[in-house]
Image 1 (tube, rainbow, N blue to C red):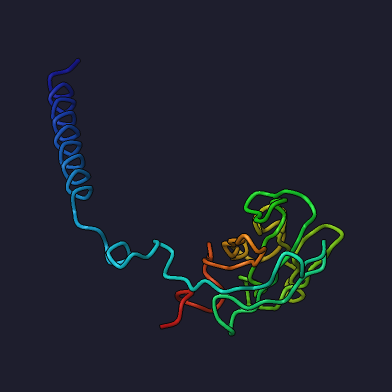
Image 2 (image 1 turned 135 degrees about the vertical axis):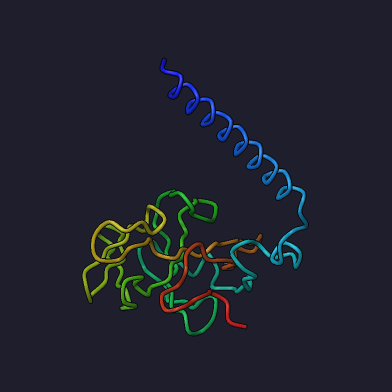
Amino acid sequence: MHKKCQKRVEIGRRQFLRGSGLAAAGAAAAAMAPAGRAEAKGMTARGDYPSNRLANIKDLKVDEPMDIAYPDDDSPGVLLKLGKRVDGGAGPDGDIVAYSVMCPHKGYELEYNAEDKTLNCPGHYSRFDCEKEGQQIFGHANQSLPMFSLRIDEKGDIYAEGVDELIYGRFENIRS
């Protein structure tokens, strides 16, 4: 190898090792730093969501959507019993899910199609799969539907306790 090339390789190695050492030191410092604002207040990284009772399992019928609002009255949603276990599903059968019904593209209110278990936008035709955690399957939207985190107590009451995506038209999901 030419001497000039060898020198450049050696300088490159030293800079790489020096940079790696600084990165490792930074990672160690971050791990030892005090908890962030959210963690210090006992919140999750996704926000301090209210726990709202939505319904009881007995109120639900397979493929008959129930209108709900979460995390506040300005956020329409839907509670669904799909009739088969799905990822993210709650309840004894793992088939209860809840989503925002505001299309993430332009905020049109979505409509449920029981045949293929999708929520569909009448504005620009985006479609979302309710059996796959609200995943977008067609259209202009650029994210999946916000899915509500559900908890079901021993009496069968269904509570929403969080949202996994940003609800259309908001900079944050919780209003102060």
